Amino acid sequence: MGEPRDIPDGKLGFLLPNRREYARANLKFVGYVLRFDPAEYTDKTEVRAKLGYGEEPLVVCAIGGTSIGRELLELCGRAYPIIRKTIPNLRMVLVCGPRLAPESLDVPKGVDIRGYVPRLYEHLAASDLAIVQGGGTTTLELTALKRPFLYFPLGQHFEQQVHVAGRLARHKAGIRMSYSETTPVTLAEKVISNLGKKVSYPPIPTDGAQKAAELIHELLGC
Image 1 (tube, rainbow, N blue to C red):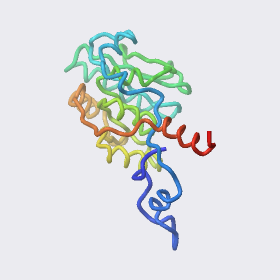
Image 2 (image 1 turned 90 degrees about the vertical axis):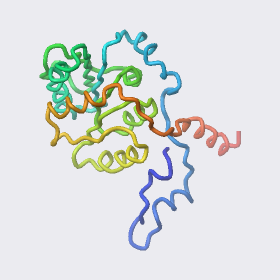
Image 3 (image 1 turned 30 degrees about the vertical axis):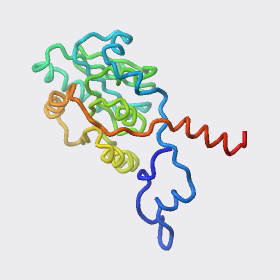
Image 4 (image 1 turned 45 degrees about the vertical axis):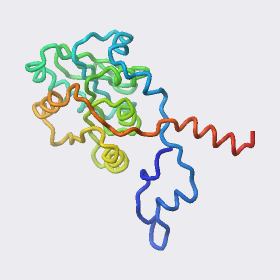
């Protein structure tokens, strides 16, 4: 799943072939696989009405399916009252996921804290800005949905720091952030300057499931 340019353009090792060329010769690329059709979420007003959100500016902060990310969510929470000085009606939703207890977070009053949220991509589609870790799935969904987002790759995490960040740079999607270099004030400034900002990410192939099914059908001779 993915594109040829997702494969590093370098050798597998000493006297070994180029990674990308080897992949091209031995694999079939199908593009990306999403659980939804991005075209069904272009009307933000309709998505918000379905989820019970109002017209207020909405920031969704999520850390995926891991407990790693408490500090990021709490950083978002500390930025909330600073942002509200400029945007008084801001709504911020922190999504803890399945492995972090919502009651364990230390955040200011007024922040909406949730545990596991099914179909999280719908809430991302409803948002005016998302703040996430550098996870491959969430950032891909935000890219396909064409929503502005800030992403914080985990420190010393090869996939997020190199692979995912490289893919996002190629897709010109999202704004890369560093947790160790971000304060509540600087985060608030980034949110204010990018909230609801119109983005123009180039289209990405999201019909990977269909293409994979066609290849399996062909292989089985059905």
